Structure formats: C-alpha cells, structure tokens
Length: 563
Image (cartoon, rainbow, N blue to C red; front, side, top):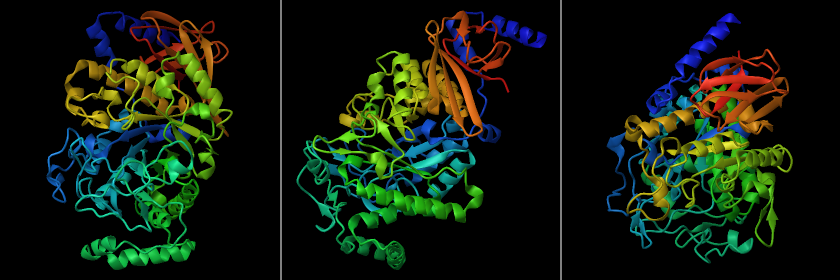
C-alpha cells in the first residue's frame, strides 16, 4: 500500500504543471499495446468491434510504380481520379502497428474488384472508379488496388495482428457504361426506370442513379455469361478455369444460373481464397432481400471451408460477419426499415448488423441521453443483433463535425456509444472533409493526411486521444457490447458490464472531468479497497469511501481492474 501511495504522490507532482505545452507532452506518453494475452483474456465480439473504414485508393500508396493502369490518364474533376492508394499501402500500416495503436480490431476496405476502364462525365468532370463501386469484373482485383498476392498478404498480416478484414461488396449494380465499357446484356441488367424511393418496388426494381445498370437480383431465370466477359477471360488465359469453377458451384448448390448467383459465387471466392472475415454490403435496400439470405448462406459455407483448410490461421470461433448499408436506417427503427408501403427486417435475411445513420444527429444530445438510449435498444428491440455507428463517412454529406473542430466529442461519442464503431479514415487525424474545388462526396474522400500527423501538434493531440480510447475499447468488450449504467452526474461517471458465460468484463469511464484534483463516484460498482488503473493517465488508484481520487490535467478517465 505504501508503494501505491508513493506512486500516486509522484504522479500528482508530475501532472501538477498546468501549462498547455506540458499537457500536450504528457498526453503523448506511450500506450500499451494489445497483446495476444490480452486477446485471450478479453475475447473479440463483433457487437463491440472497433472497425476502421478506408478508401483503398486514398489511404496509403505502397506501390507507386503501379499507379496507372488501363490507360486511365484522362484529367478528372478534383479528387475524382485514382490517387495511388493500394492494398500494399494498407499492409504497410498494419505491419507498422498503426491499427493496433488505434485499438482497431477490424479493417473495412472499399471494393477491390476490377473497375470499369473508362471514365464517366455526368457534368462534374471525368470520374474514374477509384472508389471501387463500379465493377467490371468481379473475378479480378483491379491492378490500381493491387494483386491477389497483395490481398493475401494483407489478410495474413492483419490476422497476425489480431485484426479482421471486412470487404465491401456490391451485388446491386455493375459499373457505368462508357465508350470502352459496354452495358451488360438485358437479361442481366435493367437500365431504367430510375428509382423514386417512395415505395418498395420503385426502390428495388430500378436504377439507383442514371447510367448505373441495375442487376436483376430478383430474377431466377438462367442466363448466359456476357460475351464481353468471356472474351476478356479468354484473352487473360483463364476462361477454362472460370467456367470449370462455375460448373462446380452450380452443381454443388443447385442454384439456377441467375445473375445474382453468378455474382454471389464470385464474391464468396474472396472468402474461400483469402479468409476474409466479413462483408460490408452496399445498397442493401435496393436489392430484393432474399438475395441477401443467399449471399449469407454461401458466405458461411465459404468461411467454414477456409477455416478447415487453414486451421493455423483461424483467429477464433466467431462466425462470418455481415453488416449492411440500408441507407437512412437508424437504431430507433429497431429491426425494421419502412419503405412506406412495406417494412423489411433485414436482420432476418443474413445481417448481423446494420449501419446506423442516427448517431451523428444524436451526438448533439448529452452523453447520458445517447448512451442510455443505445444500451436500452440493443438490449431490447435489437437483442442479439448490433448496429455499426459512425460520425463521418464516404457518402454522407452531413458529417457530425465537417470542420474538424470537435475531435474529443467526436471520438467520445463514436468510441464510447454502445454498439460497434466505424472510424472513417482520418477521423483520428482531422483529415479535411471540405476540399477546395471538390464537389459533392469528393470532399469526403481526400487523401490521408500522414504528413500533418507527423508535424501538426493539434493533430498529434487529437490522434493520441483517439488512440487511448481505442486501446481501451479494444481491450474491453464491455465498452461497446456491455450494459450501460450512470454512476454520477457531476462529474459524469458511468459503468459498462459485459458477461458471456464465464467471461465477465467491467469498466468505469469519466468524461468532461475538471482539470487538477477530481473525485469519481464508483460506489456500488467497485468496492472499497479495490485497486483500479486509469489507462488514460497511466495511474494506479484505490477505491476509498466509494470514490476514486485523481489529480491530473486530463478531462477523461478510463478505469479498469488492476491486473
């Protein structure tokens, strides 16, 4: 006990200086890494995952020698062309420990399949398929993103670090038609009418936008492969291989050779071959929901086959994960999305979670209002399922903090609200969401600001805060998947408890704390004499009279049981 008291006195003296420079310096103290031992003690749960979402082309350029392919050299509108980011660049950051330092335990990357070769021009200037959502050939990886060997290395490197890979997939549409990218046959796609979004029918059986051919995912009619695709495979020397694989797939499953089943086969090949851990599914509400059940069935099958073939690479016994983008779905909707004339429970069609479009608005309320609401809904209407929260994204033109002036509030709401969290690349580095000359969603897709992270003190401070919260969240499933309870109003203190069989995790968090001396109420949760550790200030404390005393310059406390 004497050693503990001496340590507390030393920490108190260390943090007594109140000038801004000293506070920034202190906040840059090293953060403990999440080790394999931590992972064993604190198992992973998708319900509380910390998922990092990045645009493959905009994150990090690992192979500058492969930046131009298919003669994609036409000038484009601002941020509408390929910028050089690739799979190899993601792997570099995985191996450097960037994601582990941020407490990330899953990476969601945009689609990597081969994109249309040409550019479109819909009045905003030329645009290439840099974002990955304009598929030309689902069976190939676009060379602008990398190779199959690159992707295999990424998955392996991520798994070695305890990080899962979530691949963005598109079943709804092909890429746009260009002068060098023909439209798919009429038995595969519809090119009209345009969606009106007022009924179920005119949201699913239509084209999402002009010149985005819509796959006939509702059809069970057998179709032949497009001549253009066959010719492409033949030129690349893999026609027989692709046809043989398709034959085996349809023989095994008994599915009709309808459009959706071809694409489902091609998408789940990325699980078979590489061991992808989950899918983020694009434009869910624009596809007949039965198609998602079909995708999930084949994804589960592929994941089990991969695990049997690669027993040494299995992270744990968690099943395949599928989260859907049902645009404008919010957690308050519970299990249903309302089309106006029809309600659909997408959780019944293969999805473990749905992206929650509501948090960025809820974040204008108090912490307690939001935390209590989410904990209640996840424990009642959505029991056994989850939502993926976000504060900014690649296609949401109304992020919570477009000017990046509220980094602590953004991080606190995202990483501490019950549910899974989606960090959008650069949230943690204040990457600009408004870019001069850019139009529309291009503003949201600037290149990752690595140089600013190395040189701008404000960004370093913000990044350190994200790291501390992320590390704590990764170590404690209770943060995202646990039951919330307020312990005190002033200062604001709350607890989270998570139980799964014999595993139990409990933590206490304090927010908006005063600088200097502070007393946190933990009575009824941690008993007197309990030794706790505040990971935010790296301070060991003991509960006395139902309280924990801290003396530092931080406004946040992250308390765990001392090991």
